[in-house]
Each structure stands twice: as structure tokens, then as C-alpha cells.
Figure (tube, rainbow, N blue to C red):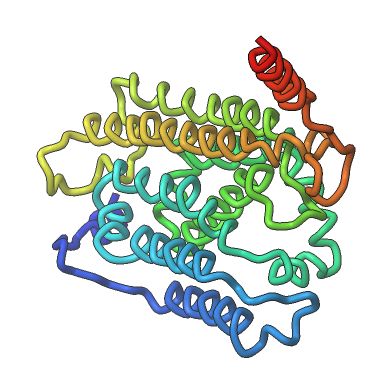
Length: 308
């Protein structure tokens, strides 16, 4: 109780943008590594190509999302005052940021990282749909039990480790849908839709349990000062609703993205092993004879009308 009072003895202001050195160092290393690999160091990578501006923009957006989620006012709110703010953090770093990051990475940039001893084997197992489903929901579920959650909130190192785990399982979550590597391929289109639909169900169950509880689960936030007109239970329910509704919306956006990408004709042809003439491989499909039949029929009618 005494420790909580000391840690909660803080003032909050939206204009207070605190950036912690341990985060900033890691964040800058990641940003520098990407832009060096995409720029002056690119010739050192095998089969490297120029990184399109679209991918650079996606990487920049992903890193800005990480910065906004884990530093500044949102960090202060989630660490010292509101459970609901912490759920916004988790939504951003687990469900929103990872797909943008995966879409920003060219295969030639990822391949050397996964070439390290053991990493490729671990990723090959972890990114299988069943493994990803179990791993994502296990990590998410365990950290939202009251005792691990309060332990994490009272120990900064464990808190950092938890956020790293949440981001890592976020990448694993989206890998079967947005893998940048053919060696660790995406699921077929219809399987992507089923995978994303089923994946979100346990997370929604956790949100429902928290939302309908009449007692607080997390002592840390029960002891926090009330800087907004929200009771402890209201804050807890708001956090659960953020996990439930916007979280489900993100998953449905992912399902829509996967569907429209799969439904493009060239993707469906590739998955069915057929291609149209001139597409560069596969089984050639001849165009139907109907245009020639129509042309011949019209020519015969014209000739009869002239004879009459």
C-alpha cells in the first residue's frame, strides 16, 4: 500500500511528454537499423532491391504508433492512473502496430535476421496457425490475471518485459496473414479469414469477464488517484470495452483486408494453379469460343440480307 501511494504521487498533464531513455535507445536503434539497411547498407544484403516509398511510410507510421503508445501522456495514464489507458496501449502495440511493421519489411531485410541459429526453426513453429493461436491467447490471458498484472505494474523491469512479449506475439499473430517471407509463407486466403475470426474469440471472452465484473480485479488501479470522473469499476469496464469493441473491429478490418486481397483474380489463379495466357506459367486457359461464334453468326445474317 505504501509503495503504491509513493508511485501514484504524480501529477498528470496532456502536455507532459516524458520519453524514457531505455525506450528511446531501443527505438532509435530499430529506426536507424531499418533506414541504414534500406539506404547505404543495402548493397551488403543478398538480392536486395530499392525499398518502395510506400514501405518506408508504413515503417515510419508503425514506429510513430509505438512511440505514442509507450511514451508521453498515454504512458503516464496507463502506468499510474487508468486501466482503460493501459488497454489502449495494448490495442496499439499488439493489434494495430504489428501489421504495419510487417508490411513495411522487404523479404531480403528479414531473411538475415531469421537466418540466425535457431530463430528460423522457432519462427517456423510459432507462426503455424495453431501455435500462433495458443501463444497469443496464452500470453494475453496470463498477463490479465490479477496477480501477474499487479506484479507487472509494481516492477518496472517486468513491465518492460511484458510489453516486449505483447509486441512479439502481435507480430506472430499477424504473420500467417502478412508474412514478408516466402520461406515462412502466409496461409491461403480462405484459411486467413478463418484464422483471424477464431483467433479473436478468447480475447473477447477475457474482455466480457472483466466488463461484467462488479468487483475490481487490479489493486494497482484501485489505489490510484481518480483524476477523471471514473470510478475504479467504470475504468475497468471501459478498459474491457476497449479490448472488446475496437479490438474486434481491428480483427474484422484484418479479415476484410485478407478477403479483398485474396479475391483479386491473380491471387485466386495462383492458389488454384491456373493462369491466364501470357501470365508467365501454370496451366493455360484458352478464352471461350463465344466471340468467334458470334462473329460467324453475324456474318451469315449479313450475307442472307444482301441476297434478299
